[in-house]
Length: 239
Image (cartoon, helix red, strand yellow):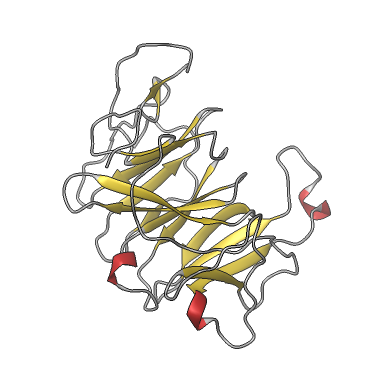
């Protein structure tokens, strides 16, 4: 595939074979692409004529939409760099979470879930405000998701001079394992309800302490700066 700027941590759905392909944008928009299993090779995702469903350069008021539009996108009002975290296929959450693709943002620490809407489109919903500098994620053999974070900065000190990072497992807030410590909440207090994801340091994680809690809300309607597409370019939110 081509027409991508900087894909970071793409993931296959282990049950369907579908490919989720987040792509870091340039200063304005972040996009998440979706490639159904069985799609042909050589798909064009529009860069550098488009950034998400927007013109590039962003100053251009009109431009053709080139290639395949993203499944979802969000503006830099909400972050700076999208990080793919993985497709949830674990045993701990109900059916609504199965097949949901999680992405996070390196700067804001926000985590979103993206899923098919049952028709031809997608829905994207904020799940958590962690306050962490998210760097990636992945799944184990059972489908549980893990998130990595760091205390680091682009253009900052050398890697060996940064504090140790951490590995977090996404677990149910009402089923925190014995000895597990949820990350502290960033900003206003959050009270996760039963069955909603939170996070705990994974065994063997580094000693760095991310300053946030992960919690989830039900999938719902995107905000004006966060759009879920249906294969058709859109600059606003869809329902």
